[in-house]
Image (cartoon, rainbow, N blue to C red; front, side, top):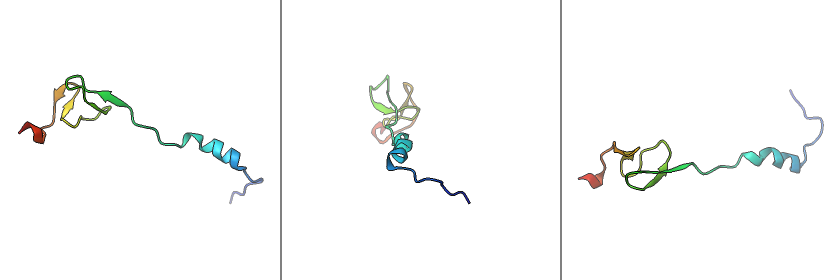
Length: 60
């Protein structure tokens, strides 16, 4: 079993964890509607890359 030789200080521990924070997902703007959505995902209105790909309730 591995046993550490010296105690790792809080400063060193926090430096190691500096990149573990959550980042916001990248966003894109739909060219046809101007709506903001996550990249590579269908917008809430059912558009993807300027084309209607999913029928929504507002289409009825």
